[in-house]
Image (cartoon, rainbow, N blue to C red; front, side):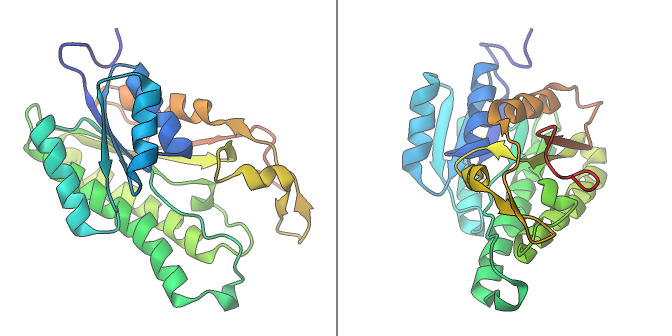
Length: 254
């Protein structure tokens, strides 16, 4: 038996669901029988994912995760449509990699922080409140941390800073959610083949200044890992998971 059934499917919210990892995870949840709220800035890609799934359990909602008003409206729709939320995959984000530290403009920094960190906070808080109120109480929040939650790439200060901060957010939610049966974990993803990471096939800067092509993995493997984390009983939690292409130059000297 899967984690949900046709008469009472569990409800998952995936942010950044229109492309990349978010798209792969949303489709995986739908295949597993969840009702899935697809959140993202642009409604067109969300509608395409819903159409591709062939499921009537997909609900696309145009959302700016960095806007408190937009996130509030998102959760009002979830409350109205489903009355609960079982899983949040906090995935929406931008990379902003490639600008030397001394050349980072304030608005560039602020935009990445607003989407990656503030957006994750706002969505997690919305899910937390609903999970606390609903019956049965509880649920699971899964934050997309990234390999950059552990180690930076060259010229990535804003992105790396937000991803290190996501780890602190994950730990705080995990601690504060205990009394409400809310589990929170983090998946740190490296080199999954998506639109965002396609440039790596041409080579990316390394710490020693060289340009190197890095091994990639299928985004479906990431989606399967997120679904696994979500399917566990709330008495069990994957606190941190790192998933990466086996030969990615991350551990040791590469």
